[in-house]
Image 1 (cartoon, rainbow, N blue to C red):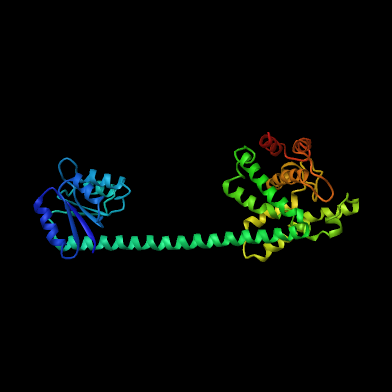
Image 2 (tube, one colour):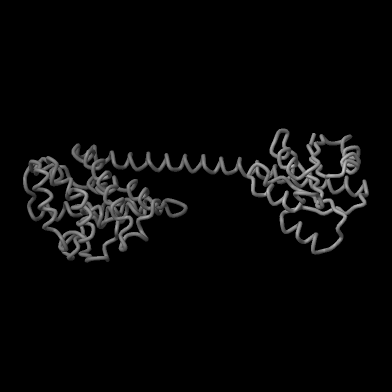
Length: 346
């Protein structure tokens, strides 16, 4: 049973409306604006308010204004009841949020019809809100499932590289942390602020483990060689950048629509060995031609390689690695990315 609050300072009007509505509705009454606000905010909350305009101390206009300012009562539909017949008074009430206007003297069939209509409209709004909430929850659930599938796919691909080279696994996880630190430090920098949104940072961090996925295409005798590579072997090793981006691109083509993290992962895999001065590989890009994700990855990748033990070398001390990284200012690394790294390490 719907609850209706009737508000009028005249007892006769309260009695008339109560008798008219009580057979079909639960009726609550208030004889002043102040009391109306108290009743409206208490249980059972009214589904509809019939509000007299002309009342002493606090008129109906002030009552509806305060109802709309309170989140507990803001959505309760209000029908004004008044002896005023001026169109400007009606316009004022509607502008304040009233859903309808009934003039005195009251015509019982009209009152009942207006009340029924507004209660049906409110019920429809509530149904739509509940339905939208269900749909939003379902969308959120499916998005969460998609994100889980993405994460599992990324880890699965990254594990392929780890199987080929046991050192790669920890390298992937460490570079992910370095990337996050660089992103957070640079997110307000004028050159990076447009790209390093919170969303892009999360996608970038998620994509990072795929930067060396192309190494699965490098023969073991080169990938796991304990000594320095020959020039011919080094040329083969450099192919891993293209192998990685080509594999990700094939995965993209299999999809029905673009997948954001794959696009970023492809840039990282392809370009993370490019150098600021153009002396890198595979395309010899310079400066801002190199995608931002790859510029960040370049520094994280080299730093971790320096401080980590590999089959062909012992790890550098942290302070020595920082010095070596610093020597790449303006040649190997984007100067602003390098400055961010040095600030973090300081």
